[in-house]
Image (cartoon, rainbow, N blue to C red):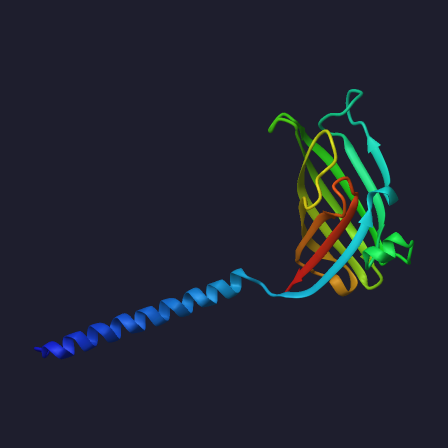
Length: 183
């Protein structure tokens, strides 16, 4: 069958348009899967001076791989509530194990962190690989990222992230944590 020249172009344009629309739809669908929607966001504040901390020296005396750092601390809904000794929103527990003490990257420690935060309506479980620079205060604006791996109560099966950052003056130990629970 012989097609007229204008039909060849029309069929070519139609095929390209359909292919482009199908490809665009597939990309849009994949992007929606790759970007889950935040269904709940919770912001809390804590202060390192309030931490009940325990250090466990795992091997030889002194700071080294395998050492543990366990902290329990209250967190508050606002920085003002924290500063005025208001009622805590809940309590967090974190257990960190030192994986590397300056051996992978000079002057950097790497920690495996597991823990949870208890709210009145349930618990949020977290895990992370955390690094810090030894010697001196951590600067304001420095962020740490945790993965939400589950929970109990209202947070049963929760997934998402927690972004913790230092707020206030450069030597401040105030921490702002933003929990982003995904769909």
